[in-house]
Image (cartoon, rainbow, N blue to C red; front, side, top):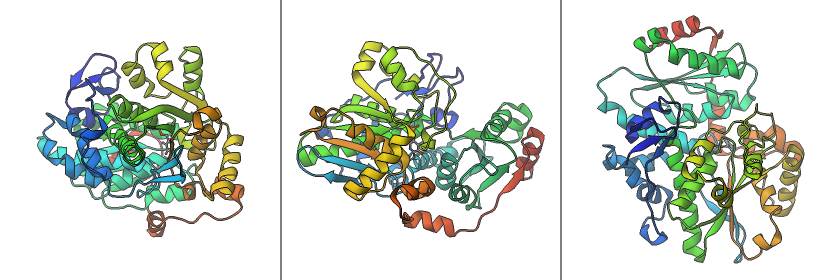
Length: 435
Ligand SMILES: *Cc1c(COP(=O)(O)O)cnc(C)c1O
C-alpha cells in the first residue's frame, strides 16, 4: 500500500507516513486505494483479530507485515465493548471506547501509533532516541504519554499550559516519569503549540535531536479507529444480520473519518452521522457548500472544540463531489444546554452517565425523525468516561461518578513536571539537558 498526500505532491510508504505525520506539502497522508471487504471475509472475533485482518492491506510492503498481529494486540489491550441499551430489532447500542489507560478513545490511536513507531525504529540508521513533542490542552497529551511510556528508543515531551488543565488532566500528564517529561509552560495552549512548532523549525535543534510529532492527523492514529468501527459493525451484523447506522461524536473529524473509511471498505455500516458541539463548521458546510473554518468556541465537550477540522481534507479527498458527499454523511450541532439536558435524560432513562462528548451523540439519536429509528439499529460511540469530566457531569446528575480502576491507578501515582517559560532557547536547553 502506498500513501499519498491529499495535496497531491507526495507519495510514500506506511512507516514514513507514520514517522512524519504530515506531508511536506502540508497535506495529510491517505491510502492510495481502500481495500474492499465483505462481512464474510473476516474470521476473527476480537477487536485485535478483526483489526489485523482489516489492516493487513495497509501494512503490505511496509516491512512490518509480520508484526501487525502483535501491534494490534499491543494497541487493543483493553476492552472495547458494544453494549445494547435497548434490545429488539431496532437495537440501540453504545460502543464504549473509554476503557483504555486514560479513559478516552484517544488511547486507541495513541497506543497503535506507539506500537508501530517502536517496531519501526530499529530499521533506521539514526540510533539516537526519538523525541516526540506534543502540545496539549488536556486530553491528547495524557493519551500520548500513557501510550509511549517505557517504549524503547522513544521519549516524549508533553507541554501543557500552567493552571489551564483540570486537576485530573494535569495528573494524567505528569504522573509517568521514565521516558516521559511534562513541561508546565507559563502561558497558554497556543504558546505551547508555538514552542513545539519553533522547535521543529530550528535547524540547530533538529541537528542535535531527532524530533517527531504524534499529532491527531497522523494516519497511524486513524487506521485503528477505522478498525473499531469495523469490529462494531461486524459484531452487530453477526448477531442480527443487519447493518447498524453509526452516530459519531467528532471534532477534528478523526473519529468520523475513520467510520467513513470503514464503510467505504465494505463493512456493514448504514448511515454515518456526525455529532458536533457548538463549533458548527462541518454541519454548516454540509448545508451550504461553503467551507468556512473559524476560531473555535469553548464548549462543555471541550475535546471537540475545533473550528477548522483538519480531517475534512481527507473526507473531501475521498469524496470530491459535493452533492455526493452530502448524500454520504450528515452532521448536527449540539449546544451546551442540550448536552446537559441529554446527560440528565439518559441518566433517568437508562441509568447511564455520559461524558459531554458522548451526550452529543445521544442527543442526535433522539432528534432523528422517528421513522429513522423505529425498527432500525444504531450504534452511538461513547468517547470518554464521565469521570474525566466530573465537574460538568456530577452537578447535572446530582451524585458522584465512580472513577474507573485504570484512572484511579493513575491518580495514585506521584507527579513531577518541569516549569518552563515559553522561549525557544530555554526549551532547547531543557532538551539538551535531558539524558
Ligand atoms: C478527541 C476527542 C473527540 C473528538 O475526536 P476527533 O478525532 O476530533 O473526531 C471526542 N471525544 C473525546 C472524549 C475526545 O477526547
